[in-house]
Amino acid sequence: MPPAARGHQTLSTYISARFDEFSRSQKDVAQYVVDHLDEVAFHTAEELARRANTSSSTVVRFSQALGFEGFPELQEAARDEYRHHHRTTTTPDTAAPLFSLDQSPFEQAIAADHVNVEETARRVSRSEVDGAIEAIASAEKILIAGTDQMAFFASYLRHLLGLLDVRAEIVSSASQDNIQKLSRMDEDTLLVVLTAGRAHPLILRALKLARHRRARTISITDSTLSDVAEHSELVLYYSSNGPSYIRSNAALMGLVQALAHGVYSRDEAAHRDRIRAFKLK
Image (tube, rainbow, N blue to C red):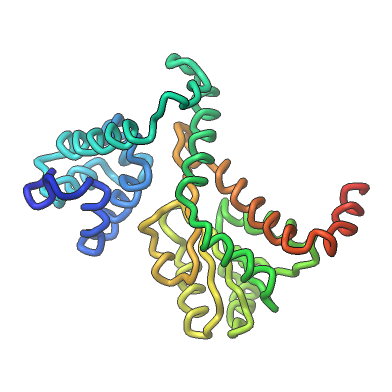
């Protein structure tokens, strides 16, 4: 660790404390390091750059901005924190690994999904989940915003809520129709946004407008240092770590379904007939 941080903070804590000092591209690296420490500990700078959607030179400059000579020193700090975390969370009763160390690509992807769901369950705040369920169940108007791949999950959340007769609209692009939906937000609106990695400009504009209009906001994100957090009333984190060329969405799917189930569980008797009719279709 750099002299200023050695012996006092973990790498993740040190990066989080200095986050506002970084350039935009360095913030992308910072977000990835904090939320994917196991990958940083064992991947090359080139691989980390690919996964963080930046360049290897940016990774090196980020390492130097923290006070390290280069990426190898940052990686060693990541390994130290990873080993410490692994020691403190492993017990004699810990379940055996799903697969052997010699994993196939298929097994690597499945194992990563398993870890992501567990990591999400450990890090999500019960108070924020309860608050999100209450906000969804009591909102007069709901807007669910998600661009690109997040548009699918926005649509799926709307579908699950629709089964409970909770109506919601989707914002998935900067089309004129979607802009009009955002312009109608007021203090009776709940805005739910879903993001992966760096938030789309449309999502950030929507959150800022919601705050200006005094609408309630919930952000579902895979980055604890995401820009959406500072503009959101409630933030739900999911882990998207994985070996594939795309982010893992297993934990996000679980989180979306769990939120809908939470709304259902508030009044099962009222929803039971609607759900039974849907199952019979």
